Image (cartoon, rainbow, N blue to C red; front, side, top):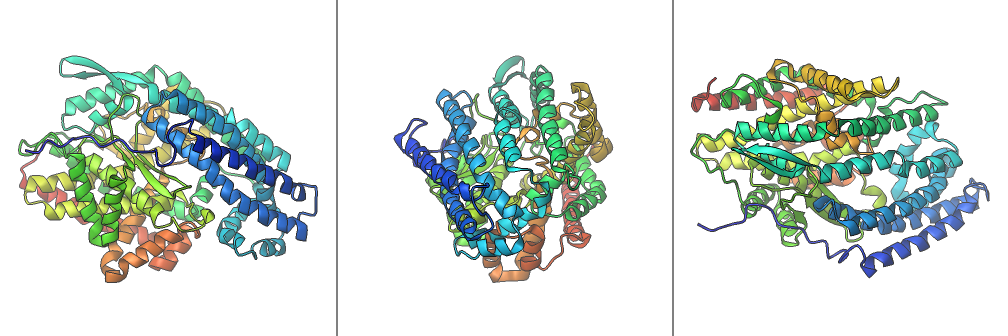
Length: 613
């Protein structure tokens, strides 16, 4: 038997910079300073020192845009490097120092770009047409016209600069505080008869083990640790939401601003599409609750616990509990991706060969998984903690999907490579489905089929129940926060009510502290980082269903769709490439309906294995 390492490898970041003090990194920051100085001079023709709407102003705006396209690369590359280092080791002093330095650059960059933002948002249509007539600038047309939809919210230049300046030690400082807390927090978990101390990320990994008691112990240990910091978390989440709500009030001088306006606009969808999506999910609750009950049945229970949210299929004694080595997982994912097109499989193997994937286990690692990228080299990086579970394999497939998305867009202008979070989940969730279906096809026993079908049910429950639970809590929280800050117990109650609304009696007990231990509620740069996952799950399922319809031409159409995500709204994208209307329930209902047969097959499989309560 070949002794393969179970956990994933450490990634290699040295192709970008050797360390936080590398001369190459400082050279990029020096170049950034030069670009910003040039922008500062040109701003005299935009912020009152010249005729902003005239020929001189338009030329200045065009020049600023071109300089900003270079500057953002010089800023984001070091930022990405610092974040990658801190994700692996939240106690990295040099990375912390670099991150702190970059905040000053970020503030200056934001301040100096504000005049251009005001120009493109507030200038009349004729001026904007002239501005976009330049061939290089024309690449930003969608970005400019989409931003102008919220032009009624723009404040004066002085006010916008003040907001940017105060944000560093305001809303973003609260987000940074939470990041540092989550990265350094440890908890005690009872394993067998011994209590072991470990990082939160490592304890979270235990919640993906087949031992129910171990999962429950890990959940309890994590919650006990967060409970000691619930006052701090409450202060942070109240401050972040309070900042956004107050800013909304300031921006609502001409027209009321709702707290959902920004996330909907950022995701490049309409409120009607979001309401339709959530309405379909609400109607689909019985199907998802049925899937959850079947998962409980597989474990000999009638309900699932909050510690079962990421549970693997039950160990029936005929499969190894050791897990799948990382290299084997890569082979499986690469083969599954390659079934769509050979280049997709080659991409997966390239990511691993280049050491662009981080999968180690460490006490100081931040929990969760993500895909990021270095704009200077146009190369992606995948981060996770790989421990060999089937869930880990699906997570790896998910994040590699994100990587593929950015990879097929690497030759586009910088302004066309940024897309809404709802569309960001398209390739990732598509990748999950590919791997699950490939695993199901190669499964030669009922137990092997159970492992894969289990992941399908877990996804269905997660996206149609868990994600809307998060949205329900956040929506209720923002509504209440408009009146006053909420106390920890109130947040616990509100979180428990959200669990009840979506899970009903399928959940043994709620997870009241989920508001404290879920990173997504503390991302200072965006709010409601939940519904994009539901959108992505159902949208990608619809895209996946088109494979047979489009046949051999599917891959080219799929890549064209991904490449357009940075220059179209989700509704226009779906209409162009899939001929569907996302604001109407038909597409979403059809997609949900296609999932019912998978639940039926899962129940039949449990019958075959004689798994009954």
